Image (cartoon, rainbow, N blue to C red; front, side):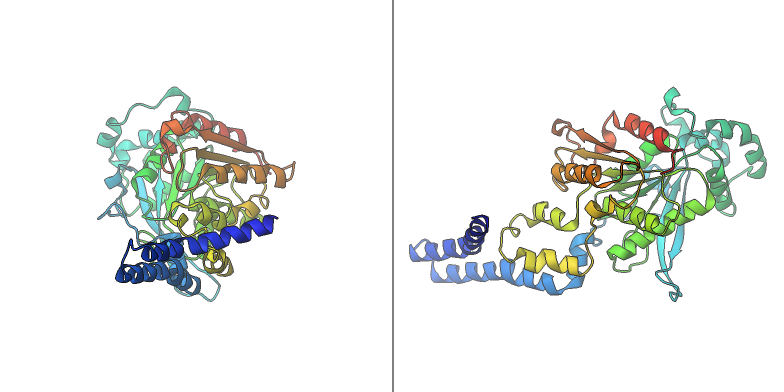
Length: 413
């Protein structure tokens, strides 16, 4: 009965539009030319385009990664201060995709210093005016585990080493602070479109900075000022692993991975790879607006609304992307690494529907070992209008992040 129902539904959706057009002509509502134009439009939009999509890997990658969408216009990513991120180092890392890769792919990275470090070294960093315009740090932000005691004890020694931070010694200074014991590092993996300097992403960095965390963020290949190499799932995961490796090679402080939207797929895939390789992994993983896998996300995305009921949708869209390894199967990867997970999702998210994030949570609860780190889920009501991008504006979010990080920063799973 279920198969018959699906068959009848497929026939209905396949014939409804052309049938309506034909009926309009037969009843005299439209003329022959209009009939021909409408039928041609139907064939182009609902038949030709899906078929082109099926056989074009370039188009599949373009629709998934949306690297052609760039905003804000004219942003100079070498100057993070233009988006309010003073005391932020811009640099580049070369990613080798394999041992024989001589040139590699260059990706652009930002290292945002924590607020308490900026307060201590504002004169050396020449950011006194910018710091003066910020609201004062709250007492709860100066907490054990954020490196405050170590900063206090070693600030005079560091000042003697770096009386002024110049381009010539900037890397040494930032890495010196990163090595200080007691700190926490957050690696932020952004979603598709635009770059690491987009407005809503900068708000997240500032939130984490004010919690006194070092923040690393970068643009995958094909995004921002990283090399214009067409991205693939394996490629962007490789980019993330190399930035993670850079951080891990400098500091033994705990690293927390934060992924947003498409970045949640990158985060879970990277953590699964690190676990499989038995490499050092993060202490915790925060997934903001996650999905289960790309097939589910495409089926639920607003852009697919008029295509997904066509009987050839799976043949022309879902299956080809899977065959071309554009999968981002977080529903599988969350069961392959042991670190604690915190999922946050807004009920009014129109890009990645709320139920996909909750489904991923249930999969993680049921599929992970009992000896692994806990999984927690936090929903944000639709009346707050946070949508897909602005959970960072939720007043309760800093407390949730602080609690999650403090609970697991010293735990090893």
